[in-house]
Image (cartoon, rainbow, N blue to C red; front, top):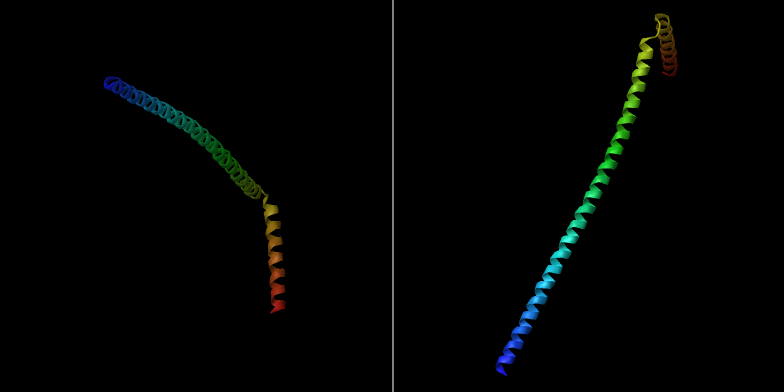
Length: 108
């Protein structure tokens, strides 16, 4: 009976060790699956974030370029004005300045 008890005890220990190893394999596999899933999700989120940032800055750059192009076009238009138009614009500005000066003197 002692031998039978010892064999049963050893068999029970062996079964417990086998269950423990099986559980460790399952836990390791689950951990690997979770890590792989996390890495896929993180990569997807990173790609999405990069796409949003790129779209934002492309829009910003396009808007700034549009504003600067408009400014340059306005300056070019002013540079292309005929000398007569420049003289007329200068005369109008001088007349406005004189009128403002008179108004200020009237207020003083």
